Image 1 (cartoon, protein in one colour):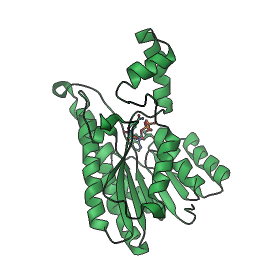
Image 2 (spheres, helix red, strand yellow; image 1 turned 60 degrees about the vertical axis):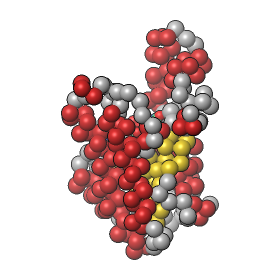
Image 3 (cartoon, rainbow, N blue to C red; image 1 turned 45 degrees about the horizontal axis):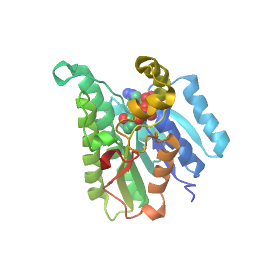
Length: 257
Ligand code: NAD
């Protein structure tokens, strides 16, 4: 399938899942706009590398997704937005009664409110074009909970709810909105935690991955950033024209438990 002629904005895409999704959208022919708040030479190089590898237009636009104005400015600066992937996210782990207020505020702003602001900015252009895709990266934690992750879980449940409302407000307009709910994904950040976990539990790599890190993931395999990119490309395909306002779990069976 080809997404040639479509422009995709992927928030938080200078690493991990966002970068994986950007690469798969570019492989499918979309022009891509990468984003983070760092604005480093490496960020701009990532965009040049994607342009060279896939023969699409790719650029990096710096914007801090904790700031409403910058969320909206990102969509404006992209010039076009046929596909919006709200992926930027952070985590903090602490009990509710010890959870720092500034961490709660930052997680709600980056993981939830940014998706509201970018969507609000992108919908008028999508309506004008009569076609649009909003893909929100939620989490298995958008459907289930764990202790000590109150802000993240509240934000991700919020993202699932926002996706449903966006779908209802755009139904019949050629626009769809869905949330992808990944389980544990093998990103560079997760990969880098494996040696410490092996040491802490005195286990080999395979055992620590299966018994500690993937304790809640029945497949005992990580999801990959390529699989999340492929799911996003699918949601942008004609086969998904009537898929809207729902969640797609990519979690090795986590939420079936
Ligand atoms: P990551 O840390 O590699 O990526 C997070 C991205 O968000 C980075 O590009 C970072 O620059 C960006 N970001 C952070 N704060 C930002 C800000 N203020 N403004 C703009 N960009 C900002 O992590 P990841 O694992 O790739 O996570 C991506 C998304 O997937 C997140 O929403 C996360 O909650 C979700 N997710 C991850 C997993 C997993 O196992 N890795 C599982 C479920 C859901």
